[in-house]
Length: 389
Image 1 (cartoon, one colour):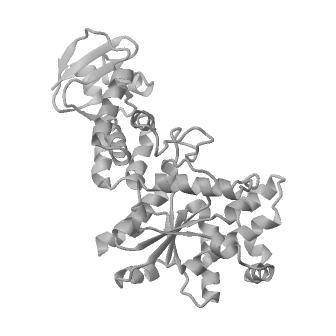
Image 2 (cartoon, rainbow, N blue to C red; image 1 turned 60 degrees about the vertical axis):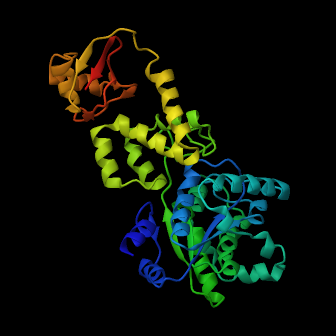
Image 3 (cartoon, helix red, strand yellow; image 1 turned 30 degrees about the vertical axis):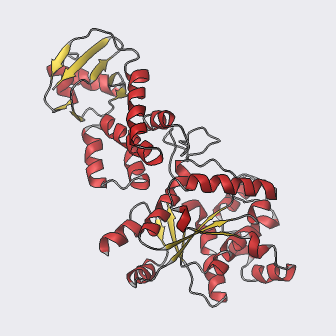
């Protein structure tokens, strides 16, 4: 049970509301209803969207009931997710089309056949004006204005509209008809997720626990993954494109990607990255391509990447050097290949971005490299070497 709890509540999570209470629920063996809400404002999912879906998969694999809520009603009034302005409302037909596309892509991660699908159109469209007023009476204006994005917008001279103050209450109310035990969401949704708790208690329900997951940085390593920023990896990307994009992420992101998007042992991956970041990145890219496509596609994508990018500037003839299966990069440059006259020069070459192995830059002078044989070392623009074990 301890390992199961660790996977559910520790790995890839940012925060768990009233953790001890949730631990008791999980230990009881009760099949929990785990909610995840999506406003169908778009249909193209990327790895940032996949993070909460992978957390849902963990709960689903543990035997709990995943409830996928589409905000067919709330999407038509506009989600105030944007910091600088409110998000535009969508038509009913747009939301339905997005829902269909979302399900097809989410099915790459979740067992959709065993997911309970609900839509908040089913209860909100039947509510009367006085029902919405009673809902609003559960909260105060100062409570709603505590939301960070509203504060930031006002500081920038922007405006907060009345319907945006209502939005978190509507999202919170969704948990009442669903009778949610747990809700999953990104850290940017924490305010909305917590509004469900007082509403559930007002309807004589036990308040849901909230499990938030981190937001994931995109290919630039700085900004949150976003299609509008162009720093995303789409879960429906063709295999070669997905592999190539993943090979471009900064090394510092690899462990986070392993944690949030795979089931790999993190201690082993941490050691792998430290010893051979290039091979670790290849392993990450192949793991994700295999998950979203298949093993054959992952192998073919790696071969395509090597052909297009690694061998692009490699001369037909180059000196060959024998190496052991593992060697420090400074020794490789100064002792084995003698492409550097000293460890100090080797360090300067690395820190200047002039050293790469099979097309992947080496940025850590302390890196210990592992070899299978056949790797190509490039130093500067003209020095190449083939390494044999």
